[in-house]
Length: 160
Length: 401
Image 1 (tube, rainbow over the protein chains, first blue to last red):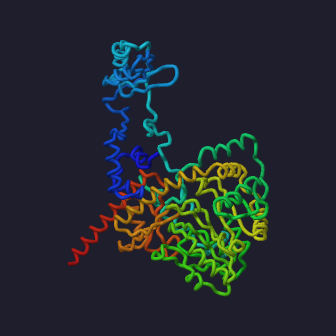
Image 2 (image 1 turned 180 degrees about the vertical axis):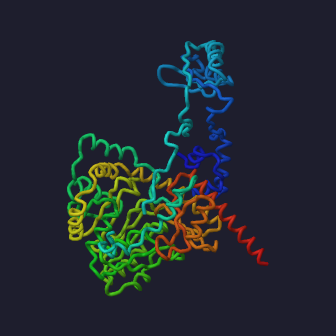
Image 3 (image 1 turned 180 degrees about the horizontal axis):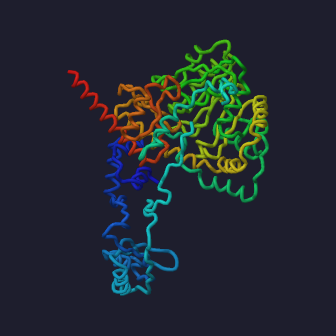
């Protein structure tokens, strides 16, 4: 994997000077490279990874399995596109296996999500069935630990 | 009350305790200390290596190993030196597996040194050479490597330190604490002096896999006429992040290894069995891990060197190990003052350079064996510290005017 992208995936807040130092490249080159990635759509954006758990306006998430009938011309794209259009939907994936599309759906309450699935998703033309799995706790997300069992202690000691 | 001093060996009483400790003890008693003082990998041993250790335990492999180490491991070590450094060693005669590289250093000293022999030890260097040399009856003769030479050992300085009593040269490169390396040309010049004066060499190559910028480590044993004069020390701690497994080895001429094996046999018997099974896996399938860790260290190294130079603390580019050795003389503080104030005022622990020999005064050792996240926070605090220091100095001189 491209080392620059790898570093940005780890932490998009490295300054271009820091990235340049780490990768042994001129800063201008790094800036140009990032701009290139942004313009060509390789880098879609930058987001914070938030642990909402203890915040007052926390929310509920569910993973929804969809079995669908692919359309003759467009395959799964049409239905995926319709799912993408809902603001409740965080992620849409095409899956290999026992179901076809996996969605991550976000709502204020479990009831919100249940209603969304029943009223909005199940009724899409071509959707055969849905399966809803509520996410109870996020331990790790996008490479980051949200729960620290060991509290990240440095167990190394200075011996000499 | 018994006066224990009466019973204690006077040589051991005269050894001073390691200077690195003091700051660690301060750090331990403080909250929220960010340490850059640890000299071991922050990585855990790669899983497949741990797994082989576990598997050996599951199979009940809990006995002593042969004194020299398992034949399979001896063979893998020989293969590794052949593959990486083009050096041929006969597994059954020229390889000895030890409890860490440190045991191998101790064995080599005790095997080679006789009372009154002088041992040339370049400094700054890892703290164990002088004490172990003294305990073996030798007299350490320290040569100071210099910042302007990028802390490389110069043949001329070596030549100047040699007396009729000199027997052994210690070559601790890639170097802890400076991060300096020696390249083929340096080694060729040193080898000439060594041969001319009929010396032996102990080459501590524990950091051999941590050499940066597409440079492959060169062992002095591979220089013409040096194979027969060199005891190579190495181990698994730094290359494979296996410090806690305590496994190292020595390679060298059969007559030397044979005597070292005797000492090892009586003092230690054999290196840990579980660790040896893991080490076999490390040598067979660990190249990728080594590359991965080296790449990670390299990124951190660049970031840290760049940051120090940017802060105004001159830092020569270290090409090996995982330390940087910035010069702090511009602050007007001694190494100890710098480290004490840095830890008291900003809660960042680094090690004073003089812990590695008097010539390390004016420098500090900074380990970058930490995550980028950790390093960034620590570097920001050091920057603040320097700014405070600068403002303090300005206020002081303004007060005088």
